[in-house]
Length: 111
Image (cartoon, rainbow, N blue to C red; front, side, top):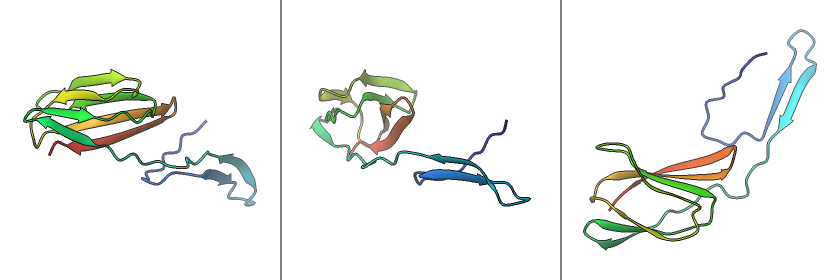
């Protein structure tokens, strides 16, 4: 058994492993490449300290404030617009769990 870590920001389409002695292929795995992997997150300012996060129906959604302390603001199925409280300049993390093996995180600065 062995483990391979591929540090990359790009999506991996397939993985092929060859034996070095005879250059024989010993493993091949193809991965589904999503048609779209980007979500433009829109935050609409409602008031000085309130922001609306639009729903995109992308699966489970977790919105958390990172500082001054880590706090979950929203944990839902991303099927309704939600309002959060925050201060301009503050950074929040929005995480979408598209499937059990695909999670997308975005950092958004309130402005």
